[in-house]
Structures are given as structure tokens and as C-alpha cells.
Image 1: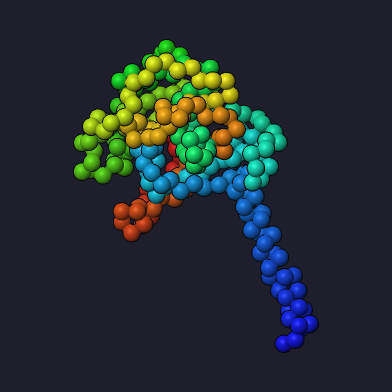
Image 2 (image 1 turned 90 degrees about the vertical axis):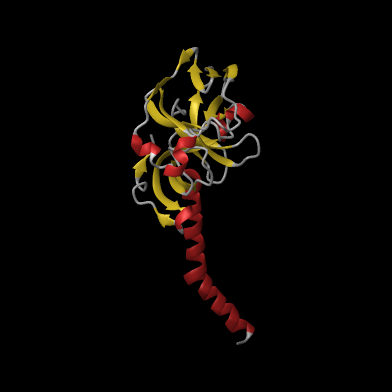
Length: 233
């Protein structure tokens, strides 16, 4: 094959195969960057709401519209609300994280012996439904304490591990303007705003709404069908 034939072959390949694939990939990545994405949860900081191996759906249009692959906001129509689960880039190191919003700008957040207070009012706690407790292996459940915590309209699970060292109390903290206070539902095993402070609005990338697929890493990554296609509390 001479140089001219090779050039003609490459042009055909570019037109028929390579260019369409590149356009498809660009559209897909732009969609994931600005519209919707899924996030593979690598840690247990949100247990028992979200467990390791869950693939969660993230609505990136929940609050605003950004230029794909950037943090430049084109339009904004909402803000995160107390109790919602959101994804954001950590102020500590830029790692993508998923946590629950417990404090809005201007809120006064306090923790007393693992009990949350918002603007001086204690948050309500009730008995947690068994279906949430059962996501924890039976042999480990005795190590933890479980409750249902109500933040605004969101009643959601929280889990405590008394024998683990953690920040269980802190003085009232007023969330700065334009920032949000985040905490994991696994309260004694979560790196969150107790350690790195408030999260700026621009760091929030979307609202997590559902588990679309869950793979059990302890059992050959077999699907947990009972967790798939379930809404997050």
C-alpha cells in the first residue's frame, strides 16, 4: 500500500468510523458532565442509606446548568435543601464526595452527644425501620446504633458506632453565606464538614436521588437486585 492509498484509507476510516465515535463520545461525556451521571460509591460513609458498591443516579440539572466540563454556571433555578443528598468536590482535596445537607447558609449547626441541633432546635429521632438496618451484615449490627433522623421533610437513616473515635459534639457553628454543612449518615465514620468546614455552593455538582444498581463486592460483585432502582430517603 503506497502513501496515497494509505491516506485515502485513513480518510475513509475517519469519515465512516472514527469521527462518528468521537462525536458520540463527546456527546456522552458532555451529557454526564452537565445533565446526569452515575457515581460508584467506594466507602461506607453514608451507610445504611448508601452502601459500598451502590451506583447512584446524580441529577446535575437539579440546581443549575453548567457549561460541560467546567464549573461555569449558565443558569440557576434552585439551591440544595436541608436533608437532600448531594455530590460535591471536597474542599480538602477536590475528591468527589456524596453526603447529606444538614445546614444551609446562615443556619446554626450544633452536635451534642451525636444529636443534631439546627438553629437551636433538636432534630427529631425515631426508631429506624428494619429494612434499613438489614443492609448491615447481621454479625456487625450489634456494633452500631440506628435511628431515623428528620431534617425538614426528609426522614432518613443514621448510624452510630460507639466504640469508634469520632467527633460527636461541637459548639454551635454558623454556616457562612454561600456555603452548606454536610454530614454522612454513618455519623462516626464520615469525613465531612465537621473536619473541613462548609462547602461552597459552586462545589456542589448535583443531587443524588436513587440507587440504580448495587454490586456486592464481598460476594463476587453479584448484583443486589433488592437495592437496585430504589429512591434515596
